[in-house]
Image (tube, rainbow, N blue to C red; front, side, top):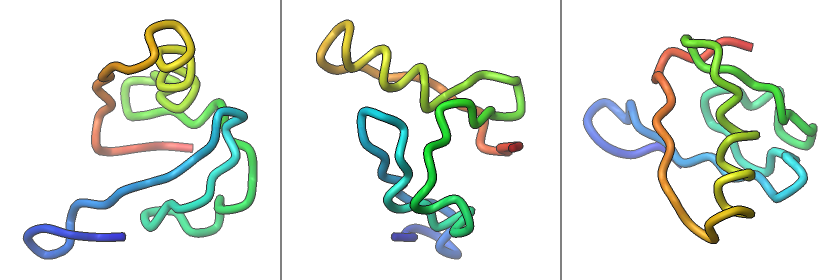
Length: 69
């Protein structure tokens, strides 16, 4: 789901195992487990989101908008 000016923003959805359900920016990874996707700084942001949720029950992480694979 894209939104905002020029539809530049989007939501992505994955489960606690790292299975991607929705990822408008990279539709070819939907249906696959991607715990090791990295942002431009090399941060494994999906893994970090899941670990934060498990540890704290909620939280926020920052990931650079220019993602790599």
